[in-house]
Length: 136
Image 1 (cartoon, helix red, strand yellow):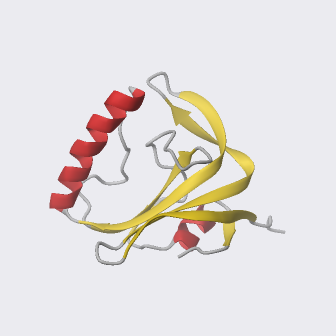
Image 2 (cartoon, one colour):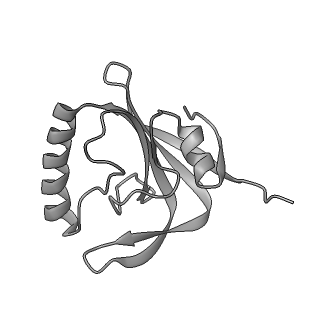
């Protein structure tokens, strides 16, 4: 007998741009989820995640990497975003641990992140959650 999926509750839109096909939304989880933070890879917990879907190309990826490396180092002194495949071009959906305001707590993607699509529902299902509210 399979286990029931937990519900991820939509909180608000962080970014929605149909021209660049970027869509990031904040969700609240019923249980705390573990994430790895800081240079010491400390295990911490949060009830909040951002699911971020975007179509990326190599030029955009390069700008994104430069910005993320600079930001992550200055703000958190931790390794910047960990990508499934840093040379990938196309649609991708990542899940990140955040606080209740949507501030990223760790750039290491969480289970459910995937490349090849832009579905928040698919990503959330991949981490064992279904969504309620305004997902994509």
